[in-house]
Image (tube, rainbow, N blue to C red; front, side):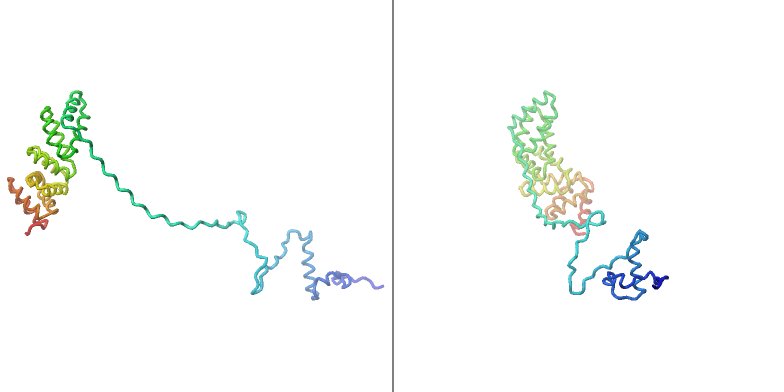
Length: 282
């Protein structure tokens, strides 16, 4: 009987001893066989912790879809998440026009005699604040009431209250100011009318122009001239030229006439201001 072989060749399995390997491995050279066997043995306890080579990723051949495609993992453990679908923005409805503000109701009127009687009672009781509030309300009443109020307050000895009422009426909007002046002028109360107009010229020039034009349109030429005369008397020539811009043909001769009635250099200053403004030729 021949002795068993020793050396490196002795570790090689004989063909009859490894039928399974012959069935699994194709015929290869000895060096390749040893490498494959070494790779299989590296999975044992002796090689614990060694990383096995990763299997190459499967790439489907051209023209064939990957039938085992799986969705990408989601969640915090994978460091990403799939965004939730967002609803499409809807167009905003067109803005609706704000409703027009309702006109303020006219303050209720009272008989002039009742107003005078209430004022007397309030003054007697020292309720000056309520008395002033009543005068403010009366100033905004229809202009036709003013002459009657003036007569009743004068009869009751409340002349100071009438002056306060005129002061409040001087701050009314231009059209109402013109209506109050016209009502007093028509009633023959020219002194009261002129006092009202003198107090009204402290407002902006554009509002004075509107009041003067309203008086002219109502045929109250005397009141319009009184208003412009008071304006030229207390305002600068430049302000009078600015007022004339609203209607140069209507205002210029009236302003020049009012300035000519005043002493000093008012007329000359107004002419110069009108020339600088380009309203009259140089």
